[in-house]
Length: 109
Image (cartoon, rainbow, N blue to C red; front, side):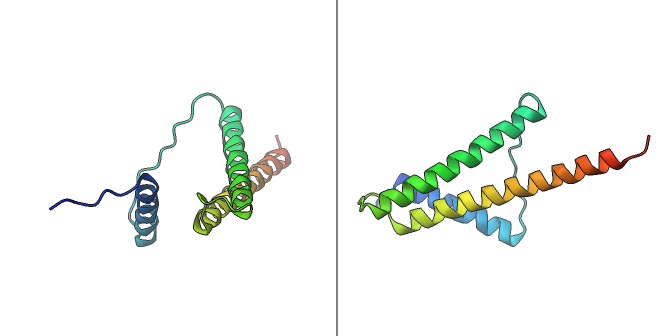
């Protein structure tokens, strides 16, 4: 008996669903936090990643709107949500950095 071959995008989707299921169940998953260089470099890399996610979301939406047969609605929605979550994370990091800066500036020496 042969097993069906799952396409690569389907495997990726199943992997993402498993990660979300584990996170919802409270299972701890290893987090890859490899950062090389300074804090500025890490911040720059994260902003570039947010930008690339937003660009990918826009490109996917435009491809879907133009009728590209290789782009499906769920792909557009997932790309949009990834970009939205990444942007919200960036805003929260910025807010925390500003609060930390204000706290440091208000300290008496």
